Image (tube, rainbow, N blue to C red):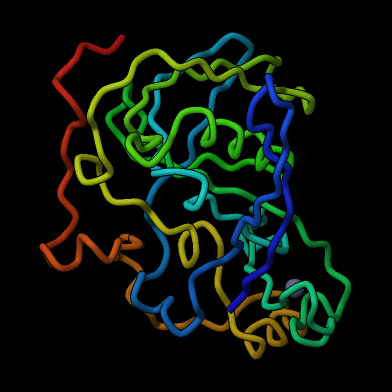
Length: 251
Ligand SMILES: [Zn+2]
């Protein structure tokens, strides 16, 4: 499994100025489990198009331990669109472990933060870069604890930066808190096998030779979903969608 750790510093409190380090797990899903999640499809991306655009969201996280980062190789697919391929290598391992690393293809650290978009009543993945890990850790440490999961909070996200501006940032404001738990919200989508292609070393070598991946013949229709163990005990039906909290007006 790609279990790469990156270190981030959490500002625990402005008063004490006490920092501690946190290891964020990357690519927690084992390769031999990926087939359970199906192929393409799944959740769409969350995006705000232009300066000042806002959306109301919930993070589909209990807390900091749910933050997952992925080391990925950006590639251009056959259709010319950018795709990501999950890196096969842990950072301590030799480059040969991953054919794309062996060929010195660029690696990026990505977060695919699962969110519930309240405005659109949809689960989406918010693609963010390495810098956002620190921000996400800060949000988790500020707004979640053993009694209150992060998903109990609704936030307004506001884009600061015009369309195409590479220095765009996002302000995240808490707007309310209730008793919502992850159980009340739609299932958390797994980016692996969906947004992030998860390929074997053999398939990567094939790509390096040909410029495309061999067809895998998997059923591509299934929604990639990472089930939480506690939920599996209770049900094995297809994911149900539930509206979180009380039915409130969105605008
Ligand atoms: Zn790699």
